Image 1 (spheres, rainbow, N blue to C red):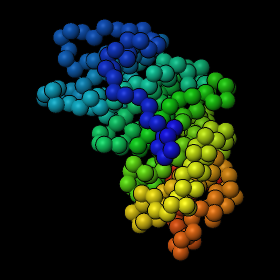
Image 2 (tube, rainbow, N blue to C red; image 1 turned 180 degrees about the vertical axis):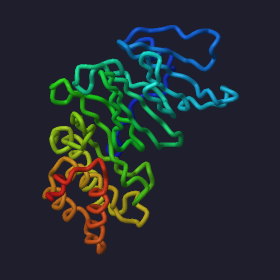
Image 3 (cartoon, one colour; image 1 turned 90 degrees about the vertical axis):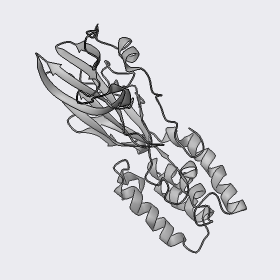
Image 4 (cartoon, rainbow, N blue to C red; image 1 turned 45 degrees about the vertical axis):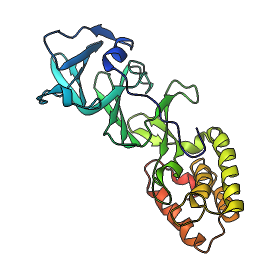
Length: 279
């Protein structure tokens, strides 16, 4: 991760090639169907990736405009649109329920935004989970604690463009944990070690802002330089350290109002847990 922005994962790929190397039994699409990109079978389920069938001219369909459907015994059980690609872990059991999962990456188009992840568990009853957040960060599935259930590492872009241009906006790292029957919930404070590198880099950045003054912010203050460090500490569950860092590095008359704005924003975020504020 760089100084202010989380690394975005997953370039645009040719989905036909991607599906060919993932788990499941490949089924070659019929040559006379220009809409069907690929089919995959996982036990009794079939996953179809297609161009939208109501598109009159496929030359103008964007790469993220694909449609994915899930079938079983000849009946469609789920469909989802605006598909960019399938996550490389499709076919694995990332939810730990003993069944393969289909992981769909959605993208709405635009310079940065917006990504969204969906997970379909192909069990006796198809389960569908939407990963909260998304936005400017696609997310990555990683088994951080080695328990066989994969967490999602993403970022919270709640402050994008708020106090400074996007290039300087802090995109704080976020960890989401899968909870059976519930889905993905924020669990960043359970993995404070993931924030050590970010905290070190952003402490230097905040110190530079204290010494040199304005840093990239709309109002001529080092708000974004300080905010990057404060968010690392809040999201990793270190509320007291976050307030101490704020008081140390942000010494402007609007400090009380700025602090309250920060807390109000993070408390409203679906990617934040109140453990980060001590509430």
